[in-house]
Image (cartoon, rainbow, N blue to C red; front, side, top):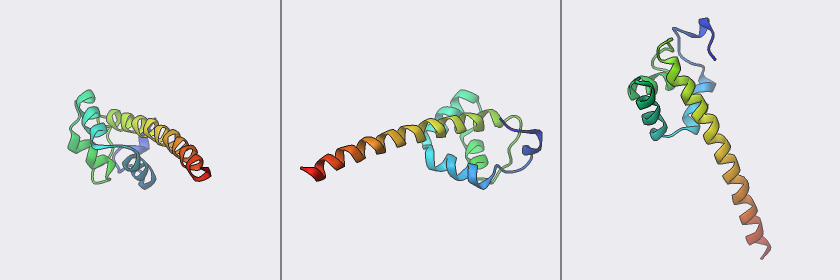
Length: 91
């Protein structure tokens, strides 16, 4: 997922924004428990106050996966909400 030149510096602003928008504190906590990488380290990398390393990249990869899955769930929920609201407007 990451290239060698990604390590030793913060993740991109765009990736940071997307992860933050599409994950919750529970995602941070669960991934911290799964990877044995501290919640605060994951948070600091996501918020760009700490650099990506080979050791914390495992957690960041899981955060990307969680953000992707959560964004799909939000999209499906929004579509269902739109259908429901459209029907209400037509009543």
